[in-house]
Amino acid sequence: MSTHAASVGTGPAAWLSGARPRTLPIAVIPVAVGTAVAAAVGHVVWWRTGFALVVSLAIQVGTNYANDYSDGVRGTDAVRVGPVRLVASGLAPASAVKRAAFLSFAVAAVAGLFLALATSPYLIAVGAACVAAGWFYTGGPRPYGYAGLGEAFVFVFFGLVAVVGTAYVSLQKVSTLAIVAAVPVGLVAVALLVVNNLRDLDNDARAGKKTLAVRLGGGRTRAMYEVCIVGAFLGVVAVAYYRRGALVALAAALFGAGPVLKVRRGAAGGDLIGVLQMTSRLDIVLGLLLTIGIAL
Image (cartoon, rainbow, N blue to C red):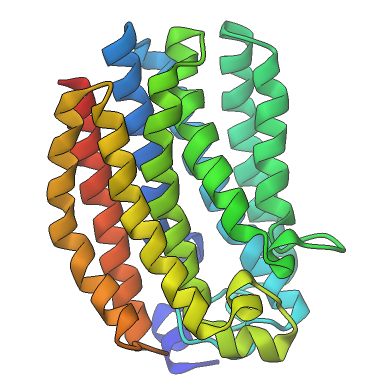
C-alpha cells in the first residue's frame, strides 16, 4: 500500500476518496447551465431539475467507481501519479467497488425513470446510454476509453446530453440555445480528460491503454488541450449571439491562461496534477459565469 493510500485509510474516507469528489463539478456545471437555459427560454420545473442533478451526480460517481474497478482488475493503475484508487491500492475488494458502481448507477436509473415518466419515455433510452457510457469507458471486453474515444464521449455526455437534457426536462423541447451552450461546457470537460490522460500517458502506454493521448503523443495532446480551452471561449461568444449576458463568462479567461501556459511549457508528471486542479477551477468559474449570463 502506498503512503498516499495509507493516509486515506480503509473506512468511509477511502470510499469518499474513491468517489473522487473533485470531479463532481463536471456533473454539476452542465445541470446549472441547462437550468439557466430553461429559465431564459421558458421556465424551470425545479423538482425535475433536482432529479436531473441527482442523475448527473450519480452517473459521475458510478463512473468513477467503475473506472476504479475496471482499471484495477486490469492492472492499469499499478503505478499512478494521481489520486489513490481503491482496487489498485488494496483499500477495498474489487467486488465491493463494482457493487458501489452498480449502486450509483441504480440511483441514477431510479431518478431518471421519474423524469421519464414526467416528461418523455425517450429519456429512458438516453439514461441507459449514459449508464452504458459510464461503465464501458474502461469496463467490458472492449472499453472505448482504451481505444482513444474517451474525449468524444465526454463531449457528448457531459456537454450535449447533460445541458440539453437538463433544459429539456423543464421545457419539454430541445432548445437551440441549450445545444450552443453545451459546446463550451463540453469542451472544458474534454480538456479535463485531456490533461488527465496527458499526466498518465507513459503509464497508460506501458499498460496497453491506448487513450487518445497515447495515440497522439505528448506534443499533439498538449495542442489539443489548448484547442479545447480556446474553443470553449469561442463557444461563449456563440452563446452570446442568443444571450448577450453570456459574454460575462469571458472573464473566466483569467483562470484559463495559467494552465494553458503550463501545458505549453511542458508541465509533466506531478506538475500536471496542478494543471488538472487549475482546469477544474476554470470549469467551475466558466460554468457559473455562463449560468449567470444566460439566466440574466
